[in-house]
Image (cartoon, rainbow, N blue to C red; front, side):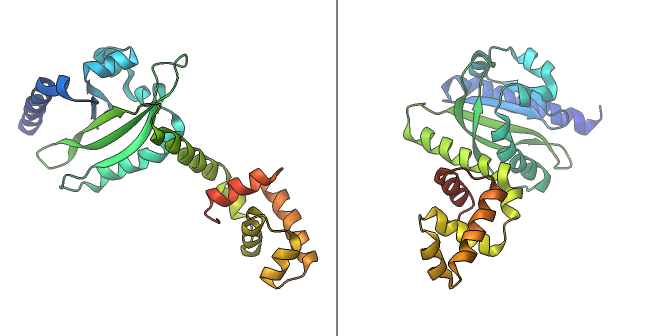
Length: 228
């Protein structure tokens, strides 16, 4: 290891020691990741207790840590933000925040956390080497949990159906909006200045393309893709 490597390791240990000295007073779980291996470098004792794994066990998991404990649908949303934070290499103290669900095993229920991540350490060339995340549990009875669930479900729906939605024509998207608002074919025809027969054909094509079975499905599409 060269001089810069030794200096980085020394600085890391100093910062980690300072963190350990106050971690019992922090209302959150602290996790530090090594960006070279993407493995856990450190997790506070509260995190070990929640996951049921020791720090050494978590280190040995390597990249598997990210798929073992966290909901993959959430990861798809916040991982690009973390990668952008790392790759942008901005020297300011940029912080990203996101919601994530974690659980110790498949036998446990998912639990929501509000997490914030930033660069924890850079090497002698100012390249990020570690990131730090603070994960605070959200009371399952708090109203925000219900709202987050609804928003993420909508976002997941959007990702699953974005290809079929993109196959709709501009006119079909217009008509889908009116369908979600509860207007019938005659009313839609009057709004768009087209024949009722044309509207009926569009409605049939929309239902076929999106595999829509009910008015509820129509509303879900319209809400997810910001038509209403």
